[in-house]
Length: 69
Image (cartoon, rainbow, N blue to C red):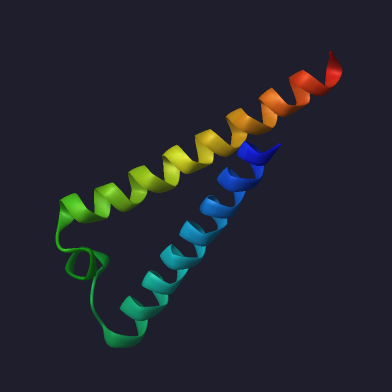
């Protein structure tokens, strides 16, 4: 249960930061590449989002599986 809460909180915080990155880029006329320090930095942001999403889904499935037993 704690793992699911931590993964969900981390994913939501990361999602909010990614949203703010998009707002900043839109308001100041920059690109996410420039803000993140290049294509590699932007790739790492996307990778973090993907891994947190998978961790959240995995912990939710494990939580549901443990509740059924």
